[in-house]
Length: 140
Length: 110
Image (tube, rainbow over the protein chains, first blue to last red):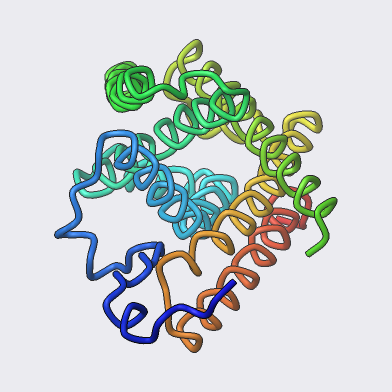
């Protein structure tokens, strides 16, 4: 095969570069709903991992003594900020769980066409929000 | 990493996820059935040997699941090698701390 003409090579369109986007680009990148569902799955996973040490601290406090349990209880039940943090973590946990099940089913080649991917991604958000509200309503 | 290691990691990530899911479901069902516990009920639940073992298993599974997940997520977004090294070190330390602290909380002296 003949070598291509250098002038043609110079005019050729550059090959596209496929890469993951950086944090700074997230705000101006419009993701479809399955993409948002996937990113939120990652964000909730990282949030839960970071919060795990804090939750272990709460568990230790609650198991140490009756006074420790009361301190834990007032942080969780008797304090608006504590409640909001725990409701956020509960949503993150339920969302991560349901989105994880969706990923496992997609690994089995279910729901891979565009319509199903979109509707199941939306369903993950709705089901997680409803389950979180139900548990919060029942426990508080 | 060899292909077999990826497959093992893929399976372990899903198995650990299912273990965590089963434990959380158990905890939520117990709380929903029995309502908000008092100190004695809460501490009695965690004094039960079987529940302690299940809790430790779930926490170890969480440490592993979080470790593998985070080590895969960081390089997709963080381009700086120095920041990546710090995040990876934090991830390993946090996962190790979760396992050791869990053993201490559940089986250490009060």
